[in-house]
Image 1 (cartoon, one colour):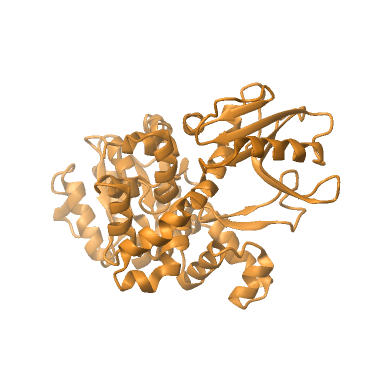
Image 2: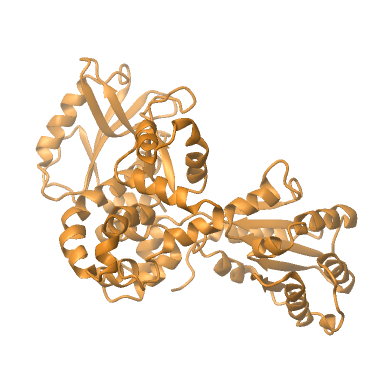
Length: 456
């Protein structure tokens, strides 16, 4: 698959490399997001690129020395007893500014925990090293402990800290060259992870990719979440358990605590960790503050994780017995449209600021609570303009069989009794799979094409 996007990151990095003084650059993000491919786009002929692994430190030092020798002749003829001696020698041998890229840096630190402190000392004492240093890693937790946290050895030394996040749905559509509707369904499975797109691209069909690579016990993605957890925690069992419980429908803190058999006070930290890693999210009703409300729900945020815990984990025994096609035909197909509707709703919320061009709007949020009649009510998407004068009230429907007039009538009724619309210009919006033949003048309709392009 050709390299897509990451233009902002590349531009920022290249600008930093133009400096005549030392630059420490940190790049991190979960596995499979294309960090290595990104580095390969910016490595210049005179730069040194090294991928670390989990061998002993002395072996890694020798391996890096050989890579340096490709640019600095005979550099590897010297035996380096430790990392500090290698870096000091590189500084002496370097006769022009180049960049040393160390990919999977956390592997080096596992074997040599003091390495970040060694680099801290080198940077502080040498002041202006003649080479730049790029540290890249997939273990988000380790990278934060080494560089980002206030007590980290390299805290305050980095000139750039770039977190690589999943890519948006527009680029998935580009990668798979599919329709806008298909892009929503594909994204609902593969999310924004380029490596998953490559795996999907190699299959003949959507069904084949899911059966062979996700459902099949030998598939490349059959154990993917557990591999990701091993990068970032010592307690992968707890992460696996929490996401599994949330995906099964236990969205309130009390429900999660009850299912896992722990007091809720013991869940705040692991749940917050999963939020930081991008695997789950805490959802609160529109208009409330996260700091001041306990009225919140936990949801699986990452589409692939959501799909995996929705369709793989509950059917683990059947899949291990080889009933992959049967699970696809009789379990997945029956509920896939409903599952997609959840992903569709979230994409619509994210797209609101770009879609509503009349004013500067916030991203959408769901609202649930009692209306002015003191009856329970819910709106899929609510967003407010920054000046508080306009409000968007929307419903997102993915099923083609929905009676759209009935949906509009229901939304009209809800809008009359919402507690937060007084004095504001209301925009009633439907996010639909396709545009109906007749649309009332007081309604705005957005389709997958509108949403996908808005998210570019």
